[in-house]
Amino acid sequence: MITLTEENYIKAIYHLGKQGRENVNTNALAEAMNTKASSATDMIRKLAEKDYANYKKYKGVTLTESGKDIAINIIRKHRLWEVFLVEKLNFTWDEVHELAEQLEHIKSQKLIDELDAFLGHPTHDPHGDPIPDKNGEFTFVEKIVLSQAQEHQTYSCLGVNDSSTEFLQYLNKNDIGLGSTIEVVHIEPFDKSINIKANGKLLTVSQSVAKNLYLKKL
Image 1: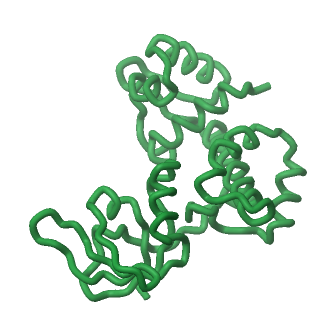
Image 2: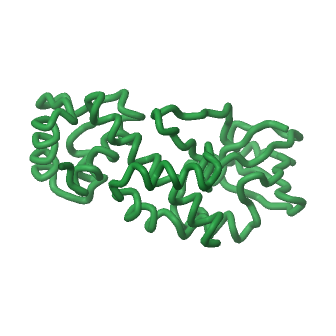
């Protein structure tokens, strides 16, 4: 039986390793889990004993195929619950992450499959992240970040790279959300800040904002 803590480590390894493709440094994992490197190493060894992870000293950790399957299933549950909370219970997109962190550990696969069907099999969560289907397949959409956008072009907001409460509340304050129309009016040569028109409202955004907002060209 896999524990909640083991699931959290597996998910962290998956994200830090860029969907399980790269080795994850023990110190980076410890920092992500807010624990000591020795504690992270102990957990990695436990995961390796259960065949969820591959670990080589000084080379870091990767997930096995069974570990990746667990990670993708946790992500699926997390993002489906976020959709449910926003669409059915009227939470805002900056409120749902912590709740979904708790709900993602529910074990019933039947419940998750029924939730998926109830929601109409959504392909993306409220932050624009893809939701894997029950076979673990993701639906990816071609996108760029605002910092890569061109002047005098119009785009649609597809999602965010930073899903922190602070960033989402910043976007809420400026009436920017999924599907918002964003016109790039001017890119400042000095600091690369960008003047945009978002849903008809003029706004200047920094590079730190521009690097975290996903768009597609209209």
